[in-house]
Image (cartoon, rainbow over all chains, first blue to last red):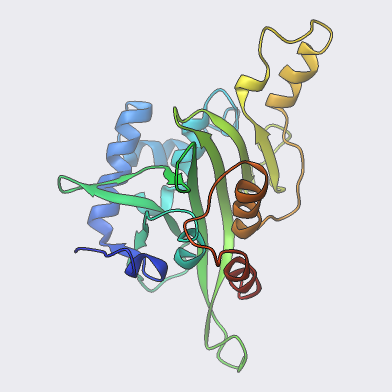
Length: 71
Length: 177
């Protein structure tokens, strides 16, 4: 879908669950070298709790905030 | 929210189409690159020197008896608003990510992060440990709005808005929740 400059004022672009899951998976692979599903499983299990908001690991919170795309 | 960010960027926010349920949704800058959707930070202003990385989680809430806000409303449940330089180094980040597993290193309260580059080795020796501690700290902020971050970017960090009428729109969208 083409979005014009005028449309950007009020429109957001909506994606399907499949598209956002794929985007989340790609990002998890790029940032953490794991699948999106594995990141979510380990996040839910608390495996990243000690480093979740560590300034040296900003990629973890970046992914955590995007988890709704991956579920 | 798109109306808000359109004062300073031509980039478009994206999210997942609505599905029934109580799960949170998230909005971010997304673009389609060769058939793959990708999240990215948006350049700000006419001559972009800063980028905005935005992740905003929200829920739909059903208010069937509320004639003013209902029958459906949206409430923020978490946010990450980050200002980055062109190399995507974080200058400042405003976070709120409530989580039952929170502790002092992973706080539930709204806070900010100062970019790691501010703890530079060229700082005076006495000051350096304080700077290092600050970049690892989570200074509390109270809830901040996206509009207030964009106001900071425009008024104090040199971002040139794309339109003249930006201030009144930020006031309107902030008031509208």
